[in-house]
Length: 440
Image: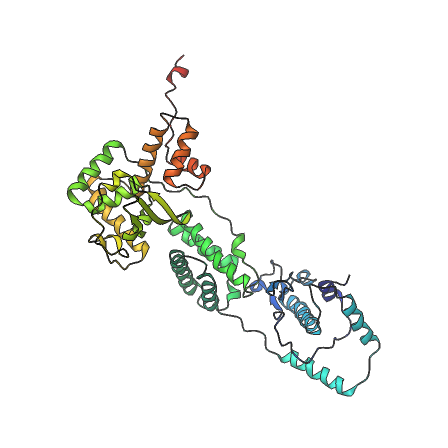
């Protein structure tokens, strides 16, 4: 069977005839040379895409290395890869197809070469075609700013507004860093693994391993979009390792602390108290409470609908303990935010992350500063506190598995495994006193 790549890298014979007319439908991308930004330790190659006969989409083909990486100078590698690129373009224009057996097409081509028909007109056309190919400009390489802008554009329809803002912020910081430390750098092909590693180490020095890993994830996602759309040869960020990080966890409140906080808020900030009760009694996350609109609450049927972390739309019951604290919502606009800086129900046009930050800062001002609570206590701590309390009550009258099964329905965890990990993380499970077993 005739294989296109093998022929391309092994054949060093005569010149090949190029078709003069271009294909009307773009069935392949122009072959390009990947030079690894001049790094001779990396493998240079020619790459291209060809339209898949079944899907109709351009699909990235196997990289063509040939003997190029045996050479130890940039000039030699570029010279041989340029030959591969020219030959590949010639073969593609002649109709060679990487998805087909090209044996017959190759044989016909050899017959023409061995038995040429002298035709001055065709010789003139061939000469013209070769000259056109030699002077044809290569596709312009995008600047790194243009490329990342395209990458973000590719991703924006696939991600949430919150994720998009995360991408934008981290990408902005990355571009500012590149501009400051590498002011002469322009092309997207100049962005390499070494440069990105240097930036990630900068983030690690300034912040934490967790934040560094988050930057790596977002930048890799955008780079993957560039690879998928043939703007770069490969997404090298995937090869950058994820660092081990110790996650920060909010502590649970003791019974005395929780009661003191509720009593204080009952006198000073009832809106914030109700916000916390949605976290405590309905086990919502703070950002999920911020998403709530008046119309999400069905008081008649005691139901609440919201967008959860692991589901586009989740429905839970509203327990009577929370219902009795709710004000009359019947006269409020159902499209209004349930919680606003001015109270319950109202128009609050702000980013979701800003809403969450607002209530976090309000909690710090009204509660944390009052009770001298450390950084490991926050709004999320109330969710941990009440899930722990509920689990310990459930397990008193049933086996741990039965208690977890009931708890999973209430908390909304997607699986038993996820719930068990959560309970371990918040230290909700304690063994019975084992003093009798070790006293002798």
